[in-house]
Every structure is written in structure tokens, then in C-alpha cells.
Length: 167
Image (tube, rainbow, N blue to C red; front, side, top):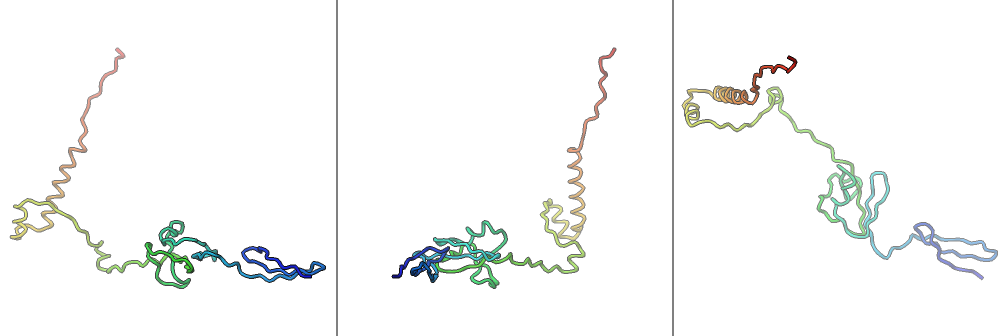
């Protein structure tokens, strides 16, 4: 006489056949899930499972700088608004390498380019257009004017000492 039973064995179901004198043999079957899940494989190999679709950005909250790809070798990261679908396996990818911008050597030597806004009078504009004064002279005049405006802020009253009442 044989006894058949299904037993839970970790994440597998086992079909066991037990015969007297109670020597049994078991066959393990992967546990079938009634509901599909989506899996996200972390860089350390551990697997996160989700029973509902989820956006990439919701997973990446806990993985700063990383991305999610369709394969472990994916070059491009999925966009943050991409919805991960049930039944698929996704991979957390390491942060994308930072590509430094190419800087022109001349621009680097001159300290780069800076944009500024300048407010000038109509008279100064006319002088600039007729080349009576240079841009440098206008800027120098503005710099001197702004430094003279700063002086009142730095002004401190000169106080005479007040004698104490020790008399």
C-alpha cells in the first residue's frame, strides 16, 4: 500500500510517495502561482517580486542613481514613467557613467565664458554705438559706481567714548 501526499517544500511543492516501512521518495515541482508577478533582479542577485504593475520611479526610490533595464547587459535605462508589466523579469542596472563635457582648451585657459546683464543709460548706449567708449570702459564705470554704492552699507558711525560714573 502506498500513500501519496503533496507537501510544501520551501518554494516548491513535493509529491511524495511513502511505502511501508515508511521509506519515501519525493519529487519536487516548482510551485505554480495562480497570479503572475513581475520580478526585479537586484545587482547582488536577489529578486524582488511585485504582484501588481509598478512604475520604474517607484522602485528606484530605494536605489539612488541606478536604473532598470530589460536585461542585465542593457545599455539604456527604462524611463522613470515606464510601467513594469506582470510576467516579466527586469534588472536593476548600476548608475550610468557620467560623461564629462568636452571643454575647449582656449576657453579653459581664459576662464570660460560668462554672461552678464548690464543696465546702461541711453547716453552710454549711444557712446558705445558710435565707438566713443569701449565696453570695458562702460563696465569699469559700472563697477566703480557699484563699489561707491557699497560704501554707505559699510559706513559705521564714529562714536566717542562715554565716561563711566566713577566720580
